[in-house]
Length: 247
Ligand SMILES: NC(=O)c1ccc[n+]([C@@H]2O[C@H](COP(=O)([O-])OP(=O)(O)OC[C@H]3O[C@@H](n4cnc5c(N)ncnc54)[C@H](O)[C@@H]3O)[C@@H](O)[C@H]2O)c1
Image 1 (cartoon, rainbow, N blue to C red):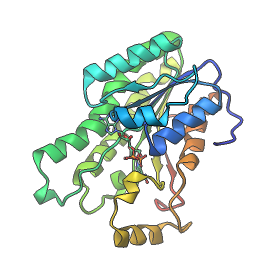
Image 2 (tube, rainbow, N blue to C red):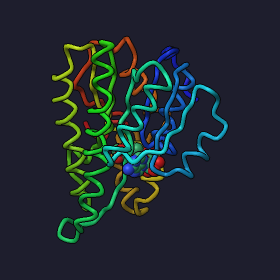
Image 3 (cartoon, protein in one colour):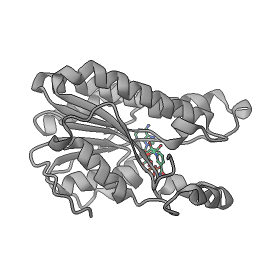
Image 4 (tube, helix red, strand yellow):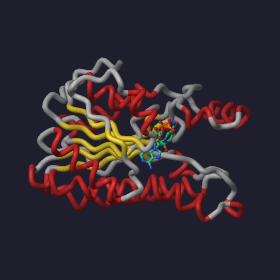
């Protein structure tokens, strides 16, 4: 639960990767702030479990963001659920870590497919409606690794760096239509972080000036701001929400 004064009543919000972790916290924040929420995820079982007690303002949809058809179907369903998608958060993600000379084609393409192609698929699908309405908010999720690199994550770093260039380019393309496109660079205690070996995690924690990983709800506060009316004059930025690690 995040206590925010943002009011998203009447807005339709799509959050990908919303079965757990940061995406679930983001979708819950938008719901608490009054929005119609479409939590989307590849993992049907986890999505159903996460949102089983959801009320009428929530429409969970199973979607593989890497598949353009599935992405288009998600946006079509979300457009019909409300009166057009007002906010899209491209959050879905996976890792397939291995040093570059051992990375398989599948591991490379899977990570690029979910993060970079997934962000493209949904952004392309959602913009026509936002352009027609003359407003919209797109928030992408990048990473410290995309800016600085990380051993074993050439695929992930390339995808996340790509998302930064994509964010800035699309921000310029749609700036005249009342649409903003921004990104956050999070650092939060989630299943993705739990998969990091303990010694590597201790090393990473030591690099965070605040000395801890964030909570998913702390990412939600930043995304809520970027998606709000109050952030209308902010576009093309990457906002680190990371306890200072990227300083
Ligand atoms: N946790 C962190 O510290 C951290 C740091 C930097 C960036 N990120 C980014 O934040 C985002 C969320 O990460 P998280 O830590 O909550 O991870 P997580 O693994 O807990 O959640 C990711 C979700 O994405 C879903 N997903 C995976 N592939 C999908 C697909 N093809 N289509 C739809 N959904 C799919 C998964 O099922 C899962 O529910 C990711 O983009 C990740 O790269 C996280």
